[in-house]
Image (cartoon, rainbow, N blue to C red; front, side, top):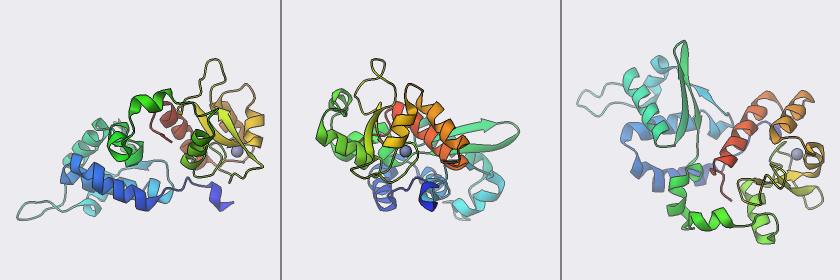
Length: 228
Ligand SMILES: [Zn+2]
């Protein structure tokens, strides 16, 4: 089941949006570091990257000065921190090991989106993605036609629209509505989305990488990064 191992991204759109919307907000080192971590995570379906600065700095960028020396370790780390502050990546730094990053696509950066699609954030926040058929199709498109939880391909006969948090706690907004297969929807019942994912993992329906990817996706959904 190779199609379940990773969440495919639309590379062409990601690169176009990077250049058109994100690059103008970044300095050249930030651009280089962002492209490096994007290439080694989302582009190949990996959720996270441990950035071994001493070795990877040789693969990221040459300096701008006359001598053009490689980007240094301290600069790499500084640029990772500034990318984190700008909401492009999520950086975890701990003393004993290399920093770890999760990378967001331009379309997942809330501040960029308005300029990309021109839609007012306030409108999106109040829209009903459960009852409105056109909005349900937008959710399905956001999920790339796959179940949000197990990433199975969805068809008319096996798809459903799921509240991540059950009503009345959860609403019909895009932060709480996903497309899922009927199997996942039924199995979830009253349990949390996290618990469903862990059950699917224990039953080897989702692999470790996908579990991590989907737990991240849930957080991104709730943070409003996954806009339909
Ligand atoms: Zn499913």
